[in-house]
Length: 542
Length: 62
Image 1 (cartoon, chains in turn yellow, orange):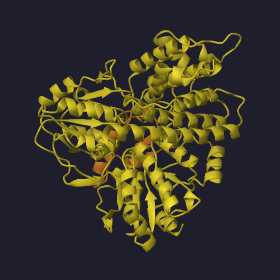
Image 2 (cartoon, one colour; image 1 turned 45 degrees about the horizontal axis):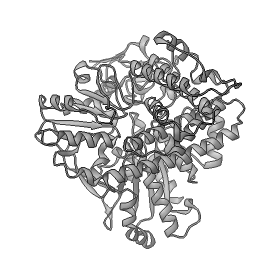
Image 3 (spheres, rainbow over the protein chains, first blue to last red; image 1 turned 120 degrees about the vertical axis):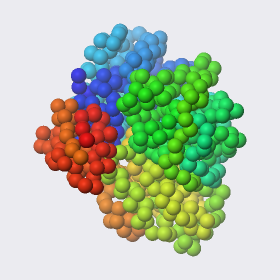
Image 4 (spheres, rainbow over the protein chains, first blue to last red; image 1 turned 180 degrees about the vertical axis):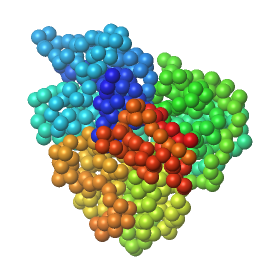
């Protein structure tokens, strides 16, 4: 059995994973992910053919974003769970009206009952079925953007916030990826509209998070350990964290955040929990050794999971939401959205307290409201020359040694510069102790990857304050690190907002064909990275 | 410390060559090879990291 996947930055050989995923997924899982996407395209075709209003498609909307989210890199490795999703999506698809006299694409009508039929069908609907490499490149870029958008839409929906424009666009764009009549120019335009709706999804999640948990504020987060047994929570879903904190209160079990869950500490609503102990560890890719030292149970609410190779570790890992891994316990929500985490709490009580891997603290919480509260100070610092430039270094971290570039780059930046960050890319430089400029820390962490929205809001506000007409006239350089598809939607959102000359690394996406890459270079000035020293010099002159 | 790769299972992802270039490299057939068997002094941790991160668990370092 073979596969073809090139959706992440670590695609094998810088091209594509064809034998097994570098992420650890099997060809079976990769192919089932392809089939799930194909089934969702069929749903989209039916929604579009019958001109259905997304506002009337509640369950289908949620299944669509859940399906897309499930296929994000490192989220779900469980073939059985993906087969269940395909079955659910096909049932929802077939319940949609089929207008008389309309001949629809195979995606809207195919059947695949049982694992064998699904596998056979999956092998016929993968990425390579689009023969023209430029069309394939644009279609996949749109689908990957939708996956990232879906992740944000699902988190927001879990907190009761939905936007039917986002769902309607998901259907429109998914259907368009099967439309052979669209030209490359039309697909490029659709790519930018994907970015436009990415902004909407990020704004929606920002509203969902802040209305539920308050506005992020400057916060010092402990990175050491306490003496109590504990649970480590990873991923991005704050509604899961809220439930876990509530259920662990008074049990004697502490809760630590891991990787992308770190920014949860910045929200006022979680500060009332005295057992919300701090952050443990670093970015996702170091988890196997860090989980060994942690010793207690781990709850994944989303990606990024590194395959736990030992049965003992699998026994301590729990998944929920779109995440999953065979051999780990998956916790489903009840119909009312409540999740029962009692099994994790019970296990934690039987295990030792975590062993320290570091000590001290880090500071974050510089989302848009907090930074804009400091706007006068920031503007004065820019006008006086105390701050020469801002560097947006948001995005993902990953395994490749070439990512040491981001640590070097941060260290080599002149002392009159400030890094604005979001996502797990920050772990490359957030413990360097880079100091502050007149009380403004030189690393401003806005939050999770979706909080890149905050960085865009800040940039737009600064543009207004400085009386500029072009966002590119601000003293801001974008040096983004990417790994999975949420970074793709962040990139497309920035392009939609008119940001030019973004540097993207550590390597450009392998899903960009040479011609599509050229379009991005010529229209938007996208470039890769060089050495840290050369780039610092180049960017300071820009 | 010695390093080897079961090349039959290698998927050519390049992570090991990226993680520990003093021991692993990508051969002309697109798969990784351990081009030295004795891990150079000072690179033991990198070789072990390459082993631990290999997505198909075909690297032996001992």
